[in-house]
Image 1: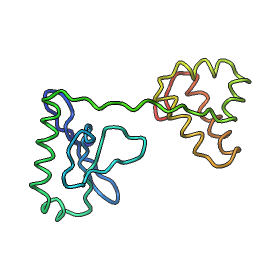
Image 2 (image 1 turned 180 degrees about the vertical axis):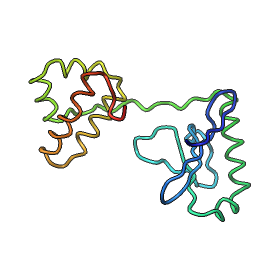
Image 3 (image 1 turned 90 degrees about the vertical axis):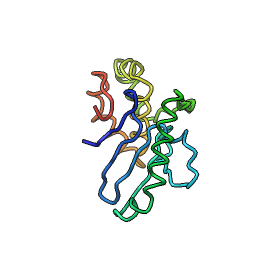
Image 4 (image 1 turned 180 degrees about the horizontal axis):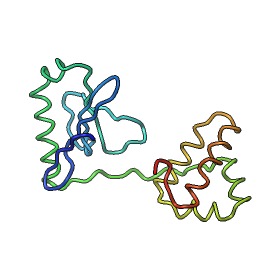
Length: 155
C-alpha cells in the first residue's frame, strides 16, 4: 500500500516504491510550475500525474526545501480547484485480429463498445503492442472472457 496525502479529501502527493527508485507522485503534477525541472511524466499516456524520483536517501535530504515547495504548490492547486485538462483521445486503430474476432463473435464487439473508453484504450494498446500477429491473436483470445463480462485489462 502506498501512502497518500490529501487536502480536503483530494489526493495531493503519493509515495511509491519501485525496484530501482522511489518516487513522490503528484496526481496534478502537470499543473505545477516545475521550476527545478525535476518532474517526470511516467509514460506518454499519462496526462496529469508527474513524479519526482529518488535512488538514494541523500537525494531526498538535498532536495528537502524543493520538495516542500512542490508539496505546498500542489496543495495550492487543490485549494484553487484547478483541474487537469484531459487530452482529446486520439482515434484508436482496431487491430485487424480484433476486427476479425468482432466479425466472428458479434457479442464481443457489443461488449467491447460498452466498455469505458479507458478500458477500450488499454485493451487496444495491449493488443497492438505485440509485434507478431500470432501474439496479438493470443492476447485477444485470453482477454475475450474478461471483455464479455465487462472487465478491464487489469481488473
